[in-house]
Image 1 (cartoon, rainbow, N blue to C red):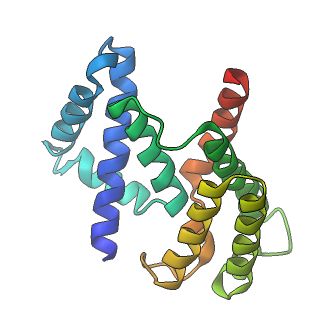
Image 2: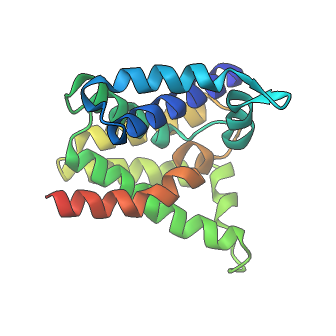
Length: 188
């Protein structure tokens, strides 16, 4: 299952990159063309490897949160319809950014406390479920459901990791989150 998850993550990331780059190339109406071109270029061998394999080695698998946000991005740019509304995206990006602020500085040794170990037990899963309840009552039902899916995927061990943090956030979504939050705020 992990192999399938990694392949899905790379395909999704490359397709999103193709859709994004198509917007700059003046192909906004035909973003699917850019997606297909990027995917085709990615499988061409280059220096005994390919972009596909390089990306797969670089990112491994994305978090469930990244996967959902990228799927929403592609849904919007391929169909023109919002799969994830602005409030849902805002809640998910805020969750990713806050989680990263709690996790990543400590992994760099900036704290004596290691929050990553919380993800090995049930504690972080309970915190994420609690956050999903808060989001539900704050009328962010889709964001709440996504967080429940994160915990379910963790409990089912969809990926090779047995740590809830890896299902919740990854460096890619954490780096992108503040920019997307700012963009969503400016568009409001």
